[in-house]
Length: 412
Image 1 (cartoon, one colour):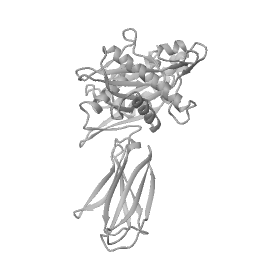
Image 2 (cartoon, helix red, strand yellow):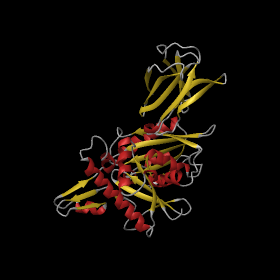
Image 3 (tube, helix red, strand yellow):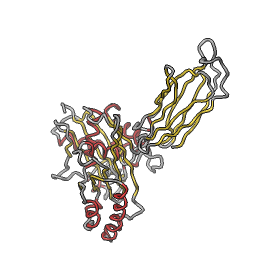
Image 4 (cartoon, helix red, strand yellow):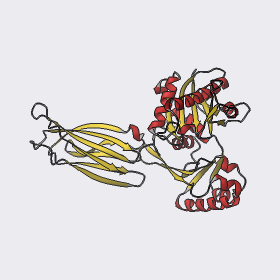
């Protein structure tokens, strides 16, 4: 992979993991301290008496000292409802990321870290902004850093495995004290690009980690019944189990249900290896450029505007499937024959459904045919809503702009 190392970081609530791309472009997990110890406590400590910051296992130990402040749940630290001071929060995350980078450099005998991809459970603009600020202050350029979700890492990992695993749906179950969820990947092949769609189901209403440790047989019964129903609805060819909950004994019924003519794997480094594969896509040589990724944090539908081009009905794409919703914005201009209404369509490939809507332009100035130029501004307001604004630009020196505009907000 050249002189510089490409690094993937799984930045989870309890533990972090790191993996780098080897010379063949394959992810290799980094062990800490002893062989096969890949789990790094996501903990930072500041001791005011020593005026000292520490991270990982050292932070866990020093957190027991007097005048020590311990920072946990680090991926949540940039959220708006965080109780931590913004500068203090940034310092805590910066300390932790510096520690991870140092571990990777030491593990690789001093190789420089060229690019970093961080994967977190849920991506939002606050987390992205906070992490980018941390890494730029550590000396990196923004273009060399990427932040994606665990769902997206899941896609990168699976699509880099043998195709017999993902010839049908693939399930990824995560069970620990912070998360109990089931992600389902469905690769929809048709005209290129193909769509890799991930749907996530929160299973925290079924049971907790406490029940798993107290009554593992009861938890096994509940989960096996849930999976029986899912497997009736979807054809599944591969299953991945992750998290400390699946390392508790007593999942006989669940495994009996899952292991019927499908591949089943258990491990803790799927997400971090997916991050390294994702880093390869963004920073090195992409091999999955024929796929659009549809998951939480990315757009799931295509938004188009109906137009006529050379006397034929056509469309202008305002937003495609697989864009990060907080970055999904566009601008277009067109000349309308009669500015009475503009027609749009929401194309949902996954559900094989299209929905049309119109924006009324009857209040715009009346002009001769083909002398009204419009500007169309599109942007997402949230993951499930977008806004379209249409402005009257007039028509050069013949008709000045009226300054009129109209907005419409659509909830998906």
